[in-house]
Image 1 (cartoon, rainbow, N blue to C red):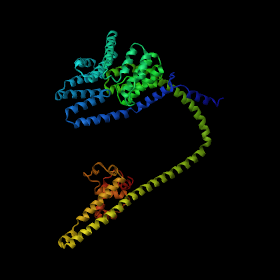
Image 2: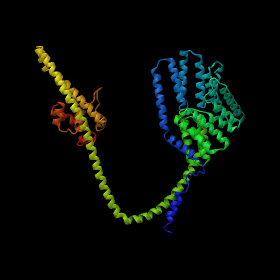
Image 3: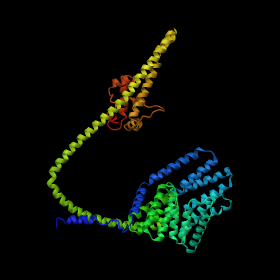
Image 4: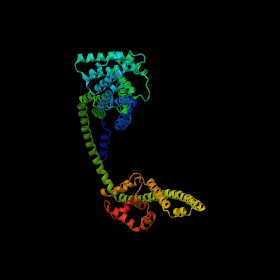
Length: 535
């Protein structure tokens, strides 16, 4: 019994619950929660995609001088920034407003007012948002702009209601929100694309949950229409909240949060509501993770309402999460004690096998060293084979090219001789231009072939040199004389006589170049050329 006690302690601690949650969620809900966890870890990937889209639009904007195109592109940038970085969205609305005198179109002023109201609503500037909405004469708007005005007004009064604590004022704002829902539904030609969602919201206000769910299930949106899918799942979650179905409420809030994360928006409600739900169900770790993500995004977006919502609940979840961490620390300590006892017993047993383990370790070390040598030899063989393959192919091509050029040169001399142009013939024979051009072309081919094999050679070579000794090439120059000498050394040509013959320089010139660069090397100067050969 004494010998089995550590094992019992170990396994008792191992299977103690660590998350403190009593939730019983369906497999589909657990799966979508795991997707949310993964999306939060990867949210920078989605944000980088949005940044690339924004950068593309900004390039287009800077490249055009057409006021109408500038106005349209500012609108696209406003849409990209609206729920991502509200300050930038506001600046593009201002840029749109500055373009209005050039465009001289009255409906565009109304559109700018609505843009202003929308972005100020996101920033929590509700007074300013309301003033801009009041500047809009809805009777002068076409149906597309009127739908935009109604949706923005509904969102504004909904935000204002969430922000208002006084019961009577809150009720008045909720009534105004519902009135704009009716206005949206009045647009039958063409009907609003999220008509079923708006109708479902009205049914939920009347606590007719089943009717609301039926409307939402009839709604169809494209697989890539993440914006409307986020609204759809959020409204589903509100409906199942009324029904008291925690599992389905969690599922749809998670789906809505996924759509928000995939869109790389930072102003949202789903994830923070999901965090509260996780807290209520005892999953403090997820609650803390979700609320922390919501706070980061709200601050980055400058979405004041969302930030206030998060900060209102954040201390409670943070405290619960810290308490859970302390509990885990206690459990970890108990596990450590149990494992320590077990480890003590294992150490006694290990002492008996120490000698054989040491022998095995020596054999493994020898095998590892042998394997490393084989890997290194294989890499050198592969590198040498690759170099030979490239240079043999290029050498053969160059030889054929030289033969063709020599034949052309011979024919040109023959023509001069046949035409009895003796002076011109001697002039051509004595000219070094042909050889100079051929040598230049040969070096170009060598440089190109070498950089194909070693594309980072110049950068890596400069890393071996001090700051004042680094080599910077001229425009359209592949390699200069210094780099060409050390390129030959990298290929294994270390003899100065061969290098001088190859480059057409004197032996003294090659020695001077090698000595000069060796003196500018960082670290051990004697091993400089060996380090070059390993680049």
